Length: 269
Image 1: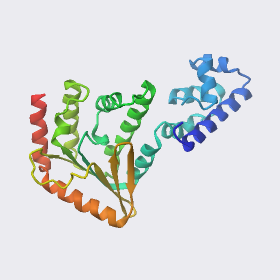
Image 2 (image 1 turned 45 degrees about the vertical axis):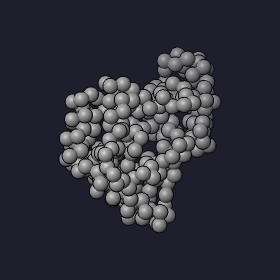
Image 3 (image 1 turned 30 degrees about the vertical axis):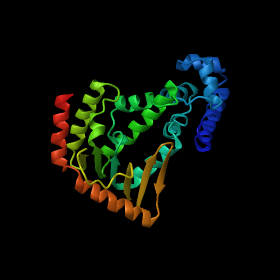
Image 4 (image 1 turned 180 degrees about the horizontal axis):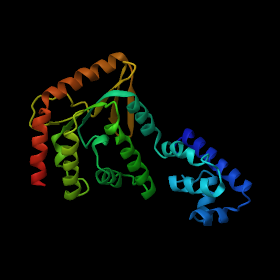
């Protein structure tokens, strides 16, 4: 596992499954046959070498007569599947009443379709394994639950024009991505803006960044760079990010103009 926190969760889950299995008098192969998995898969889960799927936990709970005690760990296991930096960001997003993000080289993670996200992770160098790609895609898409949260979180995004033109994954992936943006842009609590490439004055040349205003009234920022991402809590630095993001939004096309622009790009794709 990438970090000790996830490892501890999976070791606990694996130990519990082993205890319930032994109490039921079943061998690993017998449990596997009963729930539709191989002996090696059961062994790997019990040794915290493999992340159990929700179906694995549900079936094991039923076969072992755990009365919901095993299946209740699905949420903890789901969070353990995701990289630590994603879990940390997701926790902040859970507390956010307002979120703003500026993207300059690809679309903001909350805006991405699964196909677009997979294309990004597929082209990563050095390469991810197939399992790692699926893990990262699942983590990214899971964060998008924020769009359906009630009370609604106010979400604003500014995207560079180039991010809407670059056909990552192919033209059909881009077309579906543009259609997805148009759907999101119709939501009352979502505003998507486009920063035209021909702007001569641009406050976002420092790179990708974002802001989250939390329930307790505080604001934190984050910035992205190759090989690292950073959460920013210093009031002085957050104030700079807030000023910069406000200017970026003022320099970009309005939300209405932006949706019309995206519609035009879709027609050209």
